[in-house]
Amino acid sequence: MQSEPLEVSIYRLLKKYNYKMTTAESATGGMIASTLVNVPGISSFFEQGYVTYSDAAKISMIGVPAETIRRFGVVSAETARAMAEGAARTAGCETALSVTGVAGPDGGTEECPVGLVYIGCHMRGRTVAERHLFDGDRMAVRRAAAETALRLLKRMLEEEGGSICEL
Image (cartoon, rainbow, N blue to C red):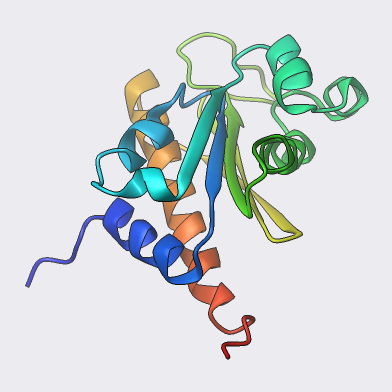
């Protein structure tokens, strides 16, 4: 038996909890949002997506503190957290996904190699950030980052079931 697509599972969970969500994407350039909108009915839960590719966009569109980027770097857990929290706050959503990283083939350094991606997920006041190092060309890194972000969202939504009191 074939399991349902990841984005359909996410849709079902968003619907179950009646959560609104948003995305703040840099390295994935809108891939997460594009995947989510494959699902009919997702517009009831997906508010908007931000493609904040530049540092300036992260600061002006979703309120990432410039100090966070200056102190920790744009590709960091701290920036991924700030992106997710800022997107959720700006869009007025319970949950948000963020991605910041180096898709390549250029731009990598020894400290921040090509394939390094941080994924943030904010849900009702709780934010987590994960570090990942993906292999492959630019498209492979972007696809892996988008899928991994969606898996993180699904996992957090599933965990949410244990923390919601149902009447």
